Length: 247
Figure 1 (tube, rainbow, N blue to C red):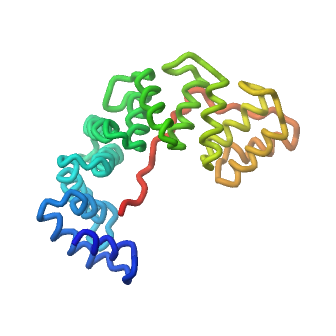
Figure 2: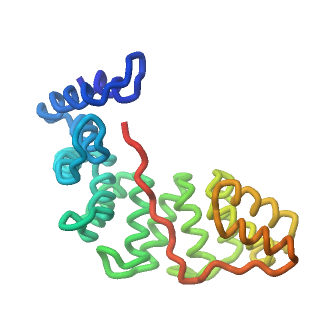
């Protein structure tokens, strides 16, 4: 039932039909299938085939999360973190991110690190943030690689190390992470952690600007007038993962 419903969502071999998918997900979810419960929660969360209902999404995500499904634990944490009104809870968000992070869910590890970095749901602990960013970054998750580079650059939770910052920015930049491309360009322009190289700075700014980074666009204008680029504020928060579509 869940596989058939998933095909109705993706349009894999059949016309997409969210209403019909919701009916089949519910049949499987009522039988206790964790993935179907998660998928039904997703449909409620985004109003696909069902009325948009944050509380219903939380209910079905919770049923799947309690069965140990990491993707549901992550989505439940994301929903609690970003909810409006009475459903919002940083404490519950952190709890579910940690559950998923312990199962090596890279997005959850990145968001758990963010919670520690910003003191949301936990006492602020930059060192723990670095630990979790590292675990996600080592799995190749670009946003965590950017965040880890930022922590090295600023010396937050770990000894300041510009070479490490450049290395992690580069890993993320090569995956088209716009903020990392901008930051790498800035390191080249300023000669921080790498020899100063305006050609490389321009190249990374161009890529970041193409990917929509507003700071990169400003840096390119600044370089064109031969004025020094401004560094991003040291207090700028690291990035949190935005929930991606689930099937």
